[in-house]
Amino acid sequence: MTEVTTDSWLEWKRDLADPQLSLPRSSVDAHCHVFGPAAEFPFSPNRKYTPGDASKSDLDNLHRHLGIDRRVIVQASCHGRDNSALLDALDHFGDSARGVVALGSEVSDAELSSMHERGVRGVRFNFVRRLVQNQPLDELKTVADKIRDLGWHIVLYFEPQDFPELETNFASLGVPLVIDHMGRPDVGLGAASQDFSDFLRFVERTQAWVKISCPERLTKTGPFALNDAEAVYDDVVPFAHKVIDEFGSRTLWGTDWPHPNLKTHMPDDAVMLNYLSQITENDRELTQLLVDNPEALYWTGETR
Image 1 (cartoon, one colour):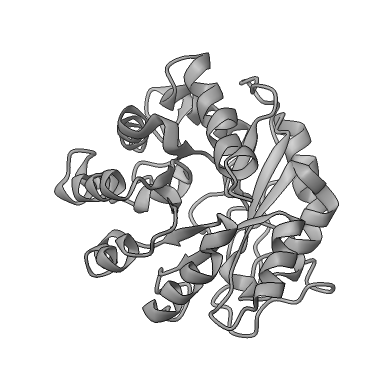
Image 2 (cartoon, rainbow, N blue to C red; image 1 turned 180 degrees about the horizontal axis):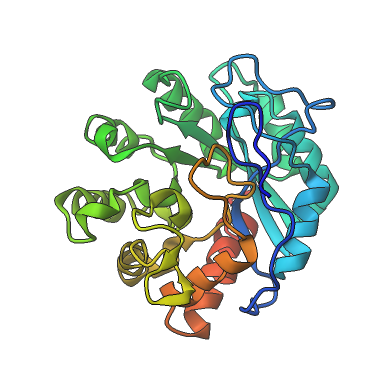
């Protein structure tokens, strides 16, 4: 039976199925996290959720089971701006990992240089109000200025209702942008909705990268298609198809393991790989999504 943390968030699933999809060599999970262990890396006292421990060793075991060779570890809000757990994981994985940290305008050039050497390549700003307090936009601009010469990018996490008031500031940052989870569209409105079309125009205008991740967060119908037990999150698939069709060379995918603050269901990460079969048309598209694109952004597309 699925365990529940003290905050009623579902715990990540340990007894995974065997994957049905064989991934290409050098595949990258471009969005995953490490949490704690809390005894070693305490969570932020200002956090809005408390996850269970999900260590670097747990992440390693997951990726071995799924056939994933490389990973991009993203700082989550429960650790605030203390990136210690993430940096420790980067040291553990070496060149097979890259990191996206959370930091503010007070960060020094020496700190940035040290993080770069350890594998950090981006900074995440979370604008989802139920997870964090409001992020000051002037700080976002200051951080963008500080990381520009390192060739880093800014990862943006927001919800569609807040996007209209944020997009002008985002477009003016002058560094590469990566958008989490397709901008969290309301899939109930359909992939042809005005909101999603506005988002896609922003992606085109800014040449942003887009993560076609987290269907488990976006779905309205649930984890499985009504008539096909092997299909997952059918209502999200048209959105991913649209992004891949328009921006195939700037798309990324990640597990979002260990799927923090979910309450409705906890996905089996091996079964979740079926989603990749639904959103890619052939082996070439799968390799582009899992190998070529993240390779370009995180390993070979550097200015330093």
